Length: 251
Image (tube, rainbow, N blue to C red; front, side):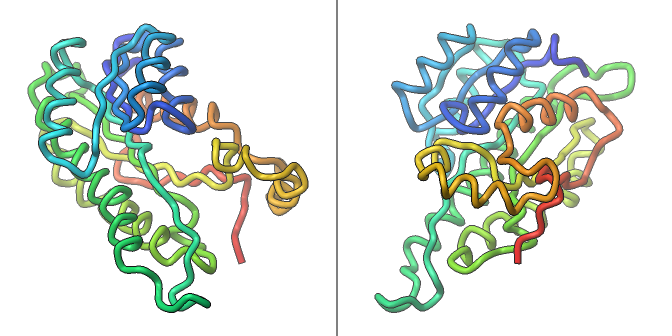
């Protein structure tokens, strides 16, 4: 597969890692359909990159089905699905206000894990209809975990559980879809300069960057996009999780 002939759906494509991926793919010739809840920003980014936009709730089956249908209408095919939509809460299991709110835990699982699977399974249905390339490839799914899946910190029970689930389903999904020529990969980012971190004070950003062994800085979302692009084009990568974190191991 080549980025220049890729038709991608990218969730969370209105900001952060998803936006950087959408821009990188489009710059390299790919068709892109952004799926995001933020209608204003999503439409703006899509217009800037010459792509398409579908307002989408990744946890809702009908919403995702409609978005996939729009992507098929606009692009004619789907060969890549990159799942970047996600949320994060910082809540301890038991804190000063009592136990972790169950609805916050459930919402995190629903968006980060169930939403990822929801989009992946519906995109895979369309990928399976593609004419295979000479090596049998019909498509690739790239999901987003986090180093929190392995090194979860205090207050990250919900987030780490959701991302651990994304890691855990990588290999079985790859095995499920092997016969259709669809690969499944997961990227586990470290600390990246997303809108959430960009809003922190400069000294806090510097403290976070200092914990990264090499290079001692926050990750650039475009680096995530470049890695996703590499995965699309490197057809022997399948069923694996790639950490992109500057060797950071949280303690």
